[in-house]
Image (tube, rainbow, N blue to C red; front, side, top):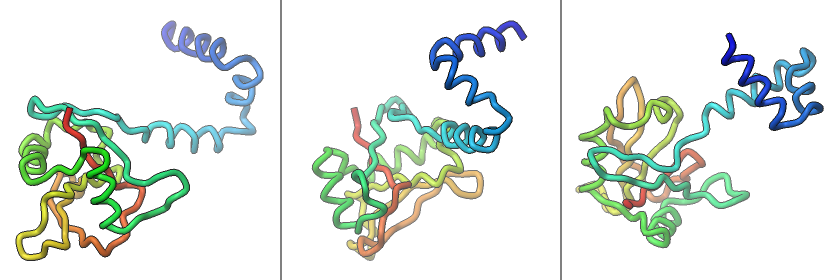
Length: 154
């Protein structure tokens, strides 16, 4: 209880009395709940799995809702995040080390240099579904949305 009170006092000092009063007002409970849920979905920008460290990079730019796969590939190359089968399989082999916050968030890691063996216009994606991380394929003609991420090895 003491730690909770300290946290509340710290928050009030940090954001100021006016914002704190608005935050705790019963008139704003629903808005605060929505904000807190959104805040809880803030994703890490770096992960370490199996001894490899990766930066997690979005592919969309400000104002974009989606882009075609060929743009994803071009941007991944620009960002030096054009990873292939070695890193994709490494991520899957060490899936149990992926942070829990990434599970169930709709995040899709795209490996732009790992093409489907029978369709070079499809790239690998690793995503969380049904309680586990799995491998799938996306055609480059598809739209890739804001849940799409590429990884850059550090």
